Image 1 (cartoon, one colour):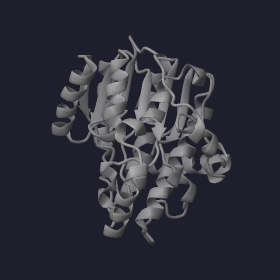
Image 2 (cartoon, helix red, strand yellow; image 1 turned 30 degrees about the vertical axis):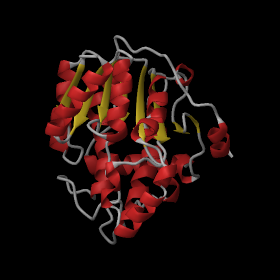
Image 3 (cartoon, one colour; image 1 turned 45 degrees about the horizontal axis):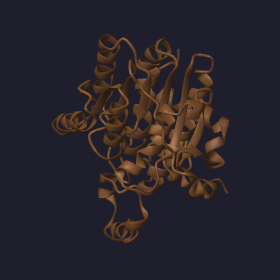
Length: 299
């Protein structure tokens, strides 16, 4: 019912300004990440584009500056599949940035062939979930608290509704299905957001997860031939990157969300997530497992 109401809702827009705010967006060199960077730069924010491919990132920075008219846009190296890269990136942020007001966890991988991160995690759960919790919990939470009010926005997917969390085999070592692994990682995003909201309650840091819509994106590259054919067939009904970025932007700037935390959004409005996505017991178990896997403790 919520999805139907959202369909008939007037398009969201906001004139909210972000002067004196610092925004960090992962995976910002292409797709909805780049469109989010352009929008928030137009609003006057300092934008840090955290990307794995620095050549593409530098080209994207030039484009964002040119379109937005905001020169205060930079790129930094971040590979979410490598804890060494995460540590170096987070240390550079902590040392070089006096504040961090908005963190948008946009980077991710989708239905890729089986592979492992540098730390031995299955690639989709490793990049889409473990990497995010690693740099937020280990490195950036203090910076965000110091900068409060601050927001953490995590791009999930409606695919979370088809996911389950396999606590006994989180890295899909016993068997691997790329669609199940992707859905598991997107459900982990929703649960991560709920867990963070609890741990950050009273700090002025709020959290949001979202479905951007079915977006024409580079992430489709790992789909099979028949799957790509289907996506091309339905492409007139999908969103382009600008449209797909709107819910990320909404969660980052909408004033009415300032006191909300832990929720799930779609089409620039609150949305219903799956029953598993509301399971606080599962969220706590996943949090504990993730911290053990990463050898970290929440402070």
